[in-house]
Length: 128
Image (cartoon, rainbow, N blue to C red; front, side, top):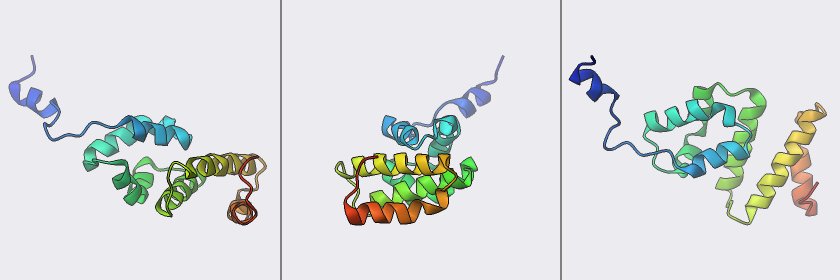
């Protein structure tokens, strides 16, 4: 039988903040759900209280999850978009950016993502 010390060690902390659904949704939107378990563990370990805290510390998250280069780039771009005034209106822009990124990656042209996004922004392109 486990000792009472062991039970205390495995009990969740009273101060522990549950992982919000919006965090899981953010991972889903970035096609990173295969990291969900590790990402939720990171959230809890770091004591994150809001998704904004994750955005502020996205590099730590990327390192902890050992994201691949393109995955890391997707996170970086999403966080940059959000910090540049991303709101509900930029949700469509993020979706379009992700579609464009996925398309370019599929064509092995990911090195052209930044110029393509800049061109789209300059010319008002918002759908594939």
